Image (cartoon, rainbow, N blue to C red):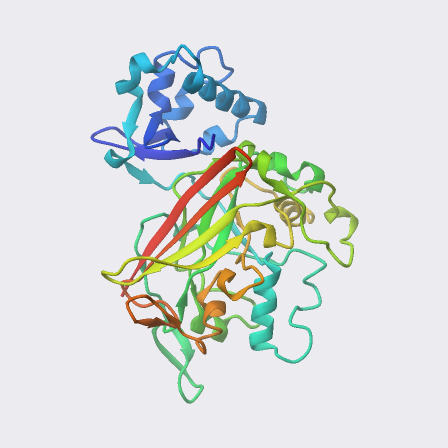
Length: 394
């Protein structure tokens, strides 16, 4: 069972913690008030909070006990919740979803090797498309947490500087607005300032995962990023899915990662299956048109695993806090229909996409809606990450 956690409100009720169960949301605050959590080592008031942070900061054993207990309540032959169904279940059509996490800090990695290779081929056609450090460490930059928004929030087209026809800077709305298909790693357990997190313990700090769209203004970014990296081309908005899927749900979907050559330095070396196999897709629709799937990818294409990203992030003593989000970077596959950005899908605008209504896209137009979805299947095991969507406004 997926059983993702989110923050919802309905009618006059204040935002609180819920779990998605098919088409209904299980109101954990009410479940707690009715005494169903009395035998667990936690204060049920944690589910009355407007963000997940307090729950995410609890010990992993407590979180697992809560998840196991919810599964028992839902599947027990006595149907323990059925007698109070109308009190604890709210149909999802009645609710408003909110940003699930109070985000303290946000780090964006560049862990998708096929994306990095494609970008290198576009802008550095001579020689190795990967920079010398790429296979030695998980490249990343610190982003802006204040502009992370929940799925469904409109995204305003950013303004900034970019080169005009004569290569001199002009100011105006971005003409090369793009999306980036990413997975967001939500930190639960904090780490201590000055103490690196060993790679073998890194997953203990992960509460769960969200879908993550790191909107990008390519023209602004290209002009500003040297020498200090992304700034206004990235920090105007990032969208995350409303539901956080807990780490425990991903256990059946572990896969072997790519062979890492050269062998990473000792603090980044892992053994076993530290990658995950999650199917991803991107859909695009213009104003008044039906959505079209334009890309299908999978998280197994990431070069660096979540554990390696955390180990590298903290190796210098940088501490992680509950609610931090680490995004993976664009997840592109090896085939053109698996690329995770329009930059790649249209090869920097040289190969426009043609949509079913006959219109074309090199980059996003006002009124376009981008929807990303994720799911994983292994035998009879299946989980869904839901979706993250955003519509571009002028």
